[in-house]
Image (tube, rainbow, N blue to C red; front, side, top):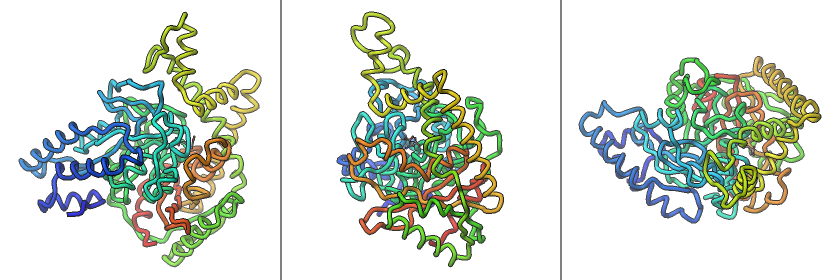
Amino acid sequence: MPIPTSLPAIKSAISEGKTNCTSLVEHYLERIEATRHLNIYIEVFTDEARQRAKELDEKFAQNPASVGKLFGAVISLKDVICYAGHEVTAGSKILKGFKSLFSATAVERLLAEDAIIIGRVNCDEFAMGSTNETSCYGPTRNAADPTKVPGGSSGASAVSVQAGTCLASIGSDTGGSVRQPAAFCGVVGFKPTYGRISRHGLLAYASSFDQIGILANNMADVAALLEVMAGPDEFDATCSERPVESFSQTQTSKPAKIAYFDSAINHPGMDAGVKKLTFDFIEKLRDEGHTVEPVGFDYLDFIIPAYYVLTTAEASSNLSRYDGIRFGQRTEGAKDIHEVYKKSRTEGFGTEVKRRIMLGTFVLSSGYYDAYYAKAQRVRRLILERTEEILQKFNFILMPASPTPAWNIGEMADDPVAMYLADIFTVQANMVGMPAIALPIGQHPCGLPVGVQFMAGKFQEAELLGFAAGLKS
Ligand code: GLN
């Protein structure tokens, strides 16, 4: 029997006795072997996943009503999320050999609902990048065309779903890391409101932007996973106290009012094929009865500079903990403590991470703080105010997920600024802490998938997911 690609279908197949957790895990393990050339997994939890599948099948056999909400869901984890007793390295040499002492709250909640974690997948080093090429484990390849990148930083999470090696993947999104790879790989990528899912156990990049996100085949699975992972957590003070709604019950085909930024879709950096697919999609939305209108947004070109000032500042502070003493790799033969720090960090971090630590340290340094960091904070506030103003009149903001389809492997290697600029459409949601989803909308003339993105007001996940689930286009 072909393996269903949604959790509700898997659950029905299990209830009808057509499959069970053990056969699901075996199927995914075979897919993992068959797709080794894509370099998706850093580590496969083979024995453990088999053992857990067996236990869960027994639990179900004894009492089908006793299994959790995620029974039948086999999931991959981005290498920035702690899973007790398992290595977590953020795709970095500096953390090689480091084992998590505890599980992220999100992981504990997945396990408590009987999900199976099949392995740890590649990502850009410390989630800094848009191509998955900054990882110390080498690039992951796009399954639609292995000469292309899968996007990043949760690139391998997207490919793990795209290539059918698991049902869904848990990634992280600081500036688009779930949504842009989802668009590049033709899957669904969702970043919740800042504070919706606890960040406890997520290795920090830029703490006021970071959110755990979901990569899946469809809206039903996004809703099911969100419902389980969301909600207050005593270990993360920024996690909201709001009760978690039932996201899986909210599908709607109610006409929505949708805004799009003229300046975004007509941006000079927009690829003609992506632009055409986006306009075609807007037409389909109108045909379905939704109102879609252009609005002005004067801050588009300020988003990227402000984002890279703020996130590098936060990263320089967050990454100062990797000193060769407390976590992971320590240099050999240093003469004194300063040399331990210096050599461990020099040897352990890759070029992109070093670039960001230096940039972040610079923008926070005395004499430059007001000119860069404080100014970027003010820009962040202006962007929030304008976004909120638009969302008072509209339900959602539509945006391309990326100005282009996936790049060639190596294409961005020597031009970090070009790579930063390509994040133009995804970082806004993180700047303002709002939820956003990337959905596949078709195939570019070059054969690669293209995605579109919808953003909603804070904590409007139920509306956003319900709307996306109800789309016919
Ligand atoms: N590409 C963006 C960056 O490099 C986003 C990364 C992310 O969301 N983790 O910062």
